[in-house]
Length: 322
Ligand code: FDA
Image 1 (cartoon, rainbow, N blue to C red):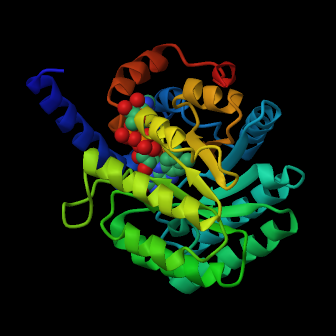
Image 2 (cartoon, rainbow, N blue to C red):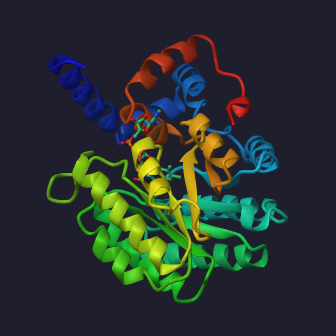
Image 3 (cartoon, rainbow, N blue to C red):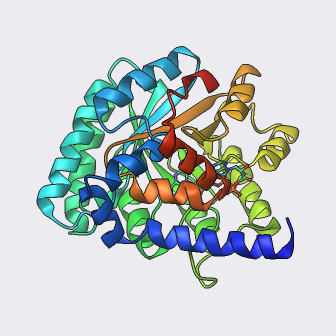
């Protein structure tokens, strides 16, 4: 890639990330009778459907092929208590639907969807209700990572929950400067920790852009968590990182799994699964795919070409790739 192309790619990434977090655009797309179905055709490559009933068969198929799954009714930043309660109720139904899949399923959620933007106590009450129900079925709830201004509150809510429940996990973003400190503080909790690079655009004060330094930091975080003996999800599509972790002998450790987003590098995850490594697919569903979809375009701009093609000819099931 020459310098101009590189520059253009950076500009496109930044523009797509700002579209991703623009609530007005999100609302407009959600409410538009013409835009919503058109963009959905492209988003469909990355989501398992708009409803739980569409997502569950997809999850069952993946499980039958030897993967674990993590289901998420995507969405974030709910500011009305009623919406947070509705979101919590949907997750409650999801947990109940996962009975029987036990440890093969985790459920992921954004705390800002179930109350954190209204009141921390509301989010905690909803989280506890979900954790109690999930513990009946052996299901773990994974808390997602959000923008850095929410991280302190998310980590505090996680600590409170992890002090009372073993079936709660958290996602840590390697790109944030604070993350090594956060990991050290929560290492003793037995729940799963998912390590991602971080999707949100952060200032230099808060985070590290994609770089060799970030790769080194990601490897250090994984190394520290593997050594703790507690479960860790290596949540990346970065072949070089996965290759290095394999070379160091971490991928095959009993507390380790590799987790990737639905529709991304299915070929790589399949290869790892076929080689005997534990492999999990993060499977989002729902109508609020706006932020999620634009992040997927932003972190790999060639997806834009594919999105345009998908709007013309919608993709069929991606299962064949897994
Ligand atoms: P990176 O972005 O450097 O990409 C490495 C390579 O992977 C690319 O060169 C390309 O080959 C491939 N690739 C990456 N993204 C692609 C895409 N969209 N399409 C096609 N190829 C792609 N983030 C967050 O902030 N909060 C969260 O809670 C979560 N949760 C989460 C769960 C799981 C299971 C995963 C895998 C990821 C997340 N993320 C997340 C997203 C994460 O922070 C990050 O943005 C993406 O995983 C992309 O980063 P990579 O580690 O893949 O590396």
